[in-house]
Image 1 (cartoon, one colour):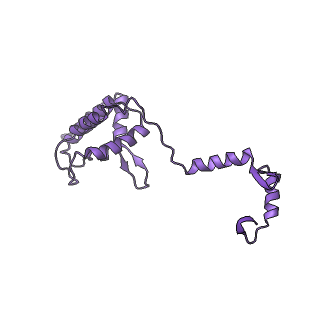
Image 2: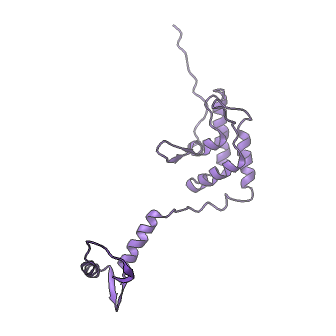
Image 3: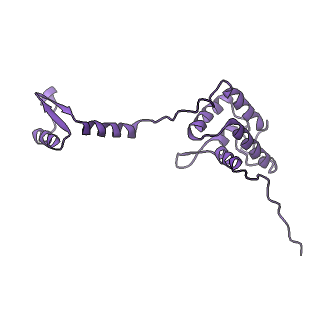
Length: 174
């Protein structure tokens, strides 16, 4: 075998004949060339292992992007939450989280800000006891290592026109 490589226990001539017979390679003089069938398989395998990045909507990633992140962050109160973390996350962390968010979801800044206000209004009534930080509200990693977004859920509610007011409980008096 060329280059001093060997494959113990494998009959190279048999394998090459099998690849030619099944249309994977073609014998061209002293060398072999991959056929279209082989190139298609290689492309499929490369897609399995490559990171496919979605293009972020360019009209959302404008010069106003940082300003919108700041508007978003100021909706959160300037307090320490029950988790002992600041409600407002650093802008750099929000930038990364929002880039992920816009790759996954297709919401406008108007919807995002309305959804965030609705979330904070609902949490204020609970005394911010279990409120998420501004970064964690955008995206959180679940136990199965996948990512999810409470912000996306609230944006969906805004798009559907759902009411965010807490239901009124009626206590029965006997």
